[in-house]
Length: 313
Image 1 (cartoon, rainbow, N blue to C red):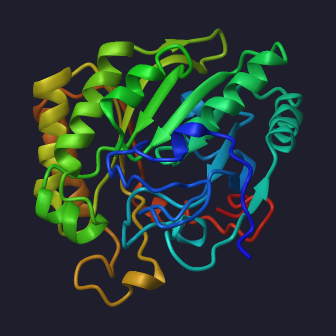
Image 2: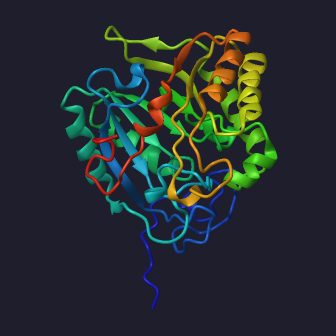
């Protein structure tokens, strides 16, 4: 006899939360692309000090890592918790358990709460935000997303999310299909990020300690051998949105075991590749934001079997 699950989110009965629009009843099965149910399944809730300076500050931020994903990046650094099929690390938690853990971290002086990979669990993320606000707390809420999000979803979050932190991974549809099983990624992600930009604008708002309170930061991870894709991502931001947008252009790509033998993804980024991308940033007058040192590829590899996956990262 199949054990029925408690229906927490009616909108997951016929799931169209993300652009996949699988129409799966997530209250009773796990057959959607993400392989997720209707519960709160968490990979980690931890203090993370390795984000951009306006996010981490000196104390770090509280990151809530959801499990599974609505994409399938073959090189994913978080594969321990993000795989869509098979066993993963993480555990099912109640809403109250999650809120208690977040609020305990906030008691240490941390005022920013980030949600990592929430695109397939938007109702769960909203419930957590509402519960924390219901306790009279008002941290800065950050949506750290792969940008494979529906425009309608971003519109619905206007009064809930203070800071959008999307990746812009690809402007090459073939590359998106081969590397992440998302051939429509360029059109979907650019529309979602454009909506974020219309909500927040190009400027970021900081508190008196230099930590972000509101705004948009677009991330881009430079992949080995895919420099033209990176340049195209930068051109979209500068030419279709604004050259004033804050960017985080990352050199931290590190090959996982899954791509160890891949002809391009099996190696780290070469200095001359990163420099070529930075030259394009200069040409486009994209002056706001952050870049990384070339040795960063050894610094940001998490281990989700640890209570804090980043304590040695």
